[in-house]
Length: 106
Image (cartoon, rainbow, N blue to C red; front, side, top):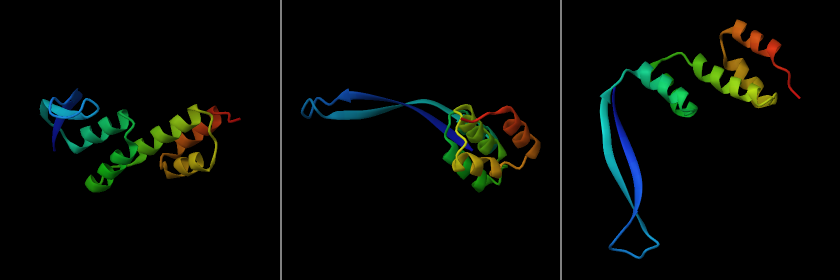
């Protein structure tokens, strides 16, 4: 898959009132990437919904997404129903067990 990288900056438009802004985009790079690389990049940037959509579209394994989401919730000591749902989506059961045993929730 091909990916475009853009840089956005806001500038005041000389043709309108000073309270208006003009959005300008510059092409920074044009790179070719695999679906797996894009998937990992979305996870690394915390774009979990996008990563799940990519996983669904390209039939990638979703465990990495759910692990990251659950790990973030557990790091924040959040042991609510949402965290339990995330843990139930992880198929790597030994990872789930290790996280549950090493985490104490308030």
